[in-house]
Amino acid sequence: MRHRSLVILTSVLTTGALTLTACGSRDNNKGGDSGSKKTEVIIGVDAPLTGQNSATGLGIQGGVQVAVDDANKKNLVPGVTFKVQALDDKAIPASGQQNATQLVNNDKVLGVVGPLNSGVATQMQQVFATANLVEISPSNTAPELTQGKNWQTKKVRPFKTYFRTATTDALQGGFAADYAYNTLKKKNVFVVDDKQTYGAGLAKLFTAGFTKAGGKVVGTDHVNTGDTDFSALVTKIKNSKADLVYYGGQYDESEKLTKQLKDGGAKIPLFGGDGMFSDTYIQTAGKTSEGDLATSVGQPVDTLASAQDFIKKYKAAGLKGDYGTYGGYSYDAATAIIKAIGNVVKDGKVPSDARAKIVDEVGKTKFNGVAGPVAFDQYGDTTNKQLTVYQVTNGKWKAVKSGTFNG
Image 1 (cartoon, rainbow, N blue to C red):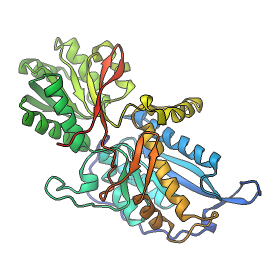
Image 2: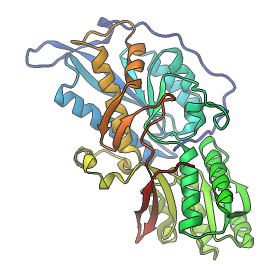
Image 3: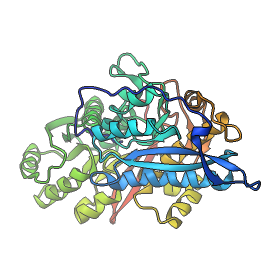
Image 4: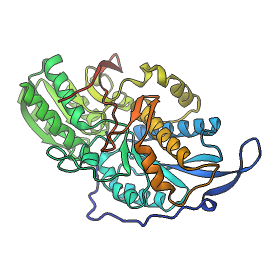
């Protein structure tokens, strides 16, 4: 997902690439059997850790923390001790940009996982690219981040430093539309979005897929992030005779919308994207969420044999947040960076061009991660195109269909 733009900036900060030195990246912690000093390397994290979207943001931080703990315990990169520096962007693009600059200015930071929101990513990419600092998002799904603003007609990769382990809305929107029309047999949909990069983009792609399949959009509307009163919108939806509401946006608003919709007498399901896929949605909406649906990237992490050790460690560590949405993808993103660092940093010695070399190594990534195979195409997009539709059943998200979508 994820992708909220609360503020649109008119300029992008540019930051000069930093020169890294081995001495500048060392600390005094002793490591290894020999008792020799180890070089401290930081994996940065940017996500909303408080406020809007914090449940999923904390899940990203937790996923990275488990990966770093594993790397240190297994001594995956001899001579290196990894640490996590997590910064809170509060789902605000301006904060994300400031965090990107802070991470770039710390020469111990050799890679960043995040952000959660696509709208935040648009204000961070240039900062990282200027400094040759690799960034892997476990959750951004807006196609233009990797394929350019004209991606539907001509794909051009804007930033070679940006990668993601989540597939894009170009697939997610169509996957949801196909399920709504052909499996749910819904014919009339009312489409709502939150006017943000992620939400508006996903709603547009769902609409295109649904109408192409033969469905009809009987109404559209927009909400603002932070809205809590949807009474006027509920009236519009009821009058439209829609048999489904599709929502492009986050759980913060949709959990309230679905409750007011059902309480207002419109007993129809609300369907959204991965921005809605969180236990928090069900907890807030309560019984009114029953029957609602959401798509999310990948397969259900709880069902993957490859993820069971990760889940066990996450729970044992008492980490906060929702690991089920992006925790596995965050672990894999951090692992990709750690593996790349291992190919560049030898015996704790960080070359002056380490950041640029790490970007190149990430591009060659290929391994089996906890959430599935990890590799990137020429645009920096994941080659793992799996998606899943979930439905609220007896108060829990239940996977009802997993697969891929080719358009």
